[in-house]
Image 1 (cartoon, rainbow, N blue to C red):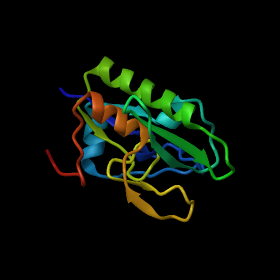
Image 2: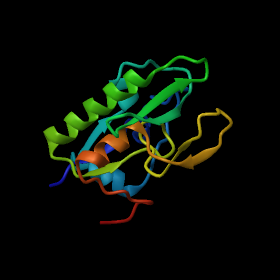
Image 3: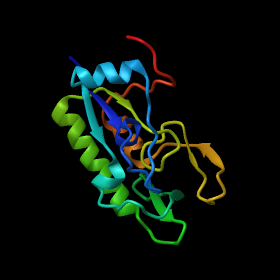
Image 4: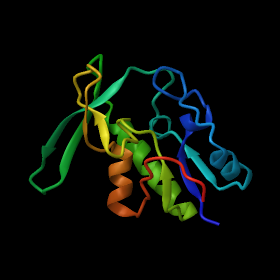
Length: 153
């Protein structure tokens, strides 16, 4: 049975930057929990960030001479938390490899987990197309399904 990576906040865990959660109450999530298919992580906590923590957004995306894109994650207080986000992304990748995970249900618009939108870095609640640090890493190295909504399987 395939394991599924899921953002911890979706299970009601108070791991968001503001100490809140994004609980999903769909029957399929409950079934997957009962079947022990879910592998739970908050990449930001895995990277060593605290609860609560300052809001953070991806602010700079620059091309390095190697052709790689350099991404900076900055808090609304000006602290650079890029290293913590990268550490959390790498720990998430290791977890995916350990459990042979091919599917993920991650929090959209998060600087870690966003798959199609992220906030623009201005802290004005403006979204742009883009991917969070963890999603970008996972998609570059393994196949992850990107469901836009839950459906019965």
